[in-house]
Image (tube, rainbow, N blue to C red; front, side, top):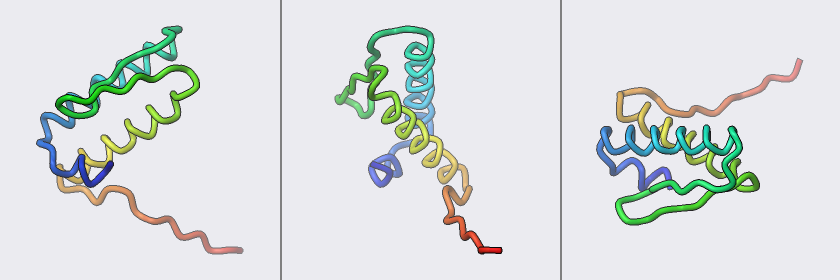
Amino acid sequence: MESALATLELSVLEGYLSDAIGAAHLLATGSIEVEVEISGSRKVKYNQTTSRQLAAYISSLQNAITIKNGGMGRKPIHVVPV
């Protein structure tokens, strides 16, 4: 999914992110089901049981936007035992 997002223009990514965040808000405030456009012609329906998938999609969009803006995106975290 993330490699497909990398090919999109920044304005498109920002539009998808806005729609996805709006959909997450609707689910959080009681909507039964929401529909989100994830590419030009593809839409996905989310509900309370699939809200984690919507959150993951939002995270992927945020990461793609960070990279487009010159950021590093997600980096591995190394934990050192004490």
